[in-house]
Length: 293
Ligand SMILES: [Zn+2]
View 1: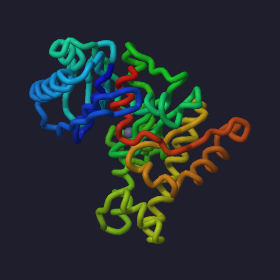
View 2 (view 1 turned 60 degrees about the vertical axis):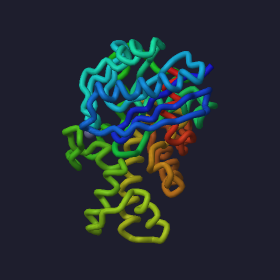
View 3 (view 1 turned 45 degrees about the horizontal axis):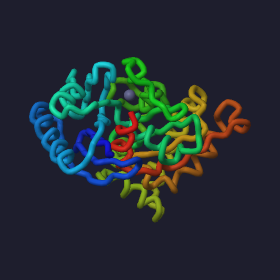
């Protein structure tokens, strides 16, 4: 028996046929901020029906960007796909006759890491995803709280304040972690120094060849990420923090700094050390985590 995991992001929706931590089959539908919701639902249910005609599927899980209400089964708000108050769980359930559940994408990825990935051996795990924005989640005993709109909206780790009155953030406030440590922020910071628009991956690659602007950009990024993680550890006390998202691919450059900074700055850090590591499951984590809801 299989489950279907759907991961809806600002660029694409991935639909996977999942068995435990294995993605047996994957299809991709492009998404963007102009995508009509009804068209998307029609398209995705066709893909689901096609998969179900060849495989035994018992449930569907949705991992979505934005603010989710798991009790209503709705995407309440998303700045990336511009669907407000869409009852996607009901809409897919009605068309497929399969049980459907939903949670925020960073939460689904964290759940998958906690159950199958880097958090397997731990009871208290945090995951922080560094991509276009900064997402995250805190998982205790490999479970996500469900059916509570307030619980659905916790773990907004990207908007911890790391510099009072600092850089403008997309949320409207200033000085959030996301404004310093997302891939977008890294690119912006490098552009301010050099006038060049290159990807975060290219900036980290330039660190490897000692480009001084790239090194300065990375030092700023890791300092603010470290400050954010210190606050996070003081409040939540995870045993392990997994760094996920595109930026994690270059994490060999900054994990040593983070481990030493965070453990030396956290209250009683030496007595209760936290391990900061790279996530394991890559970009299939959202789909896999959705099937665990
Ligand atoms: Zn913010």
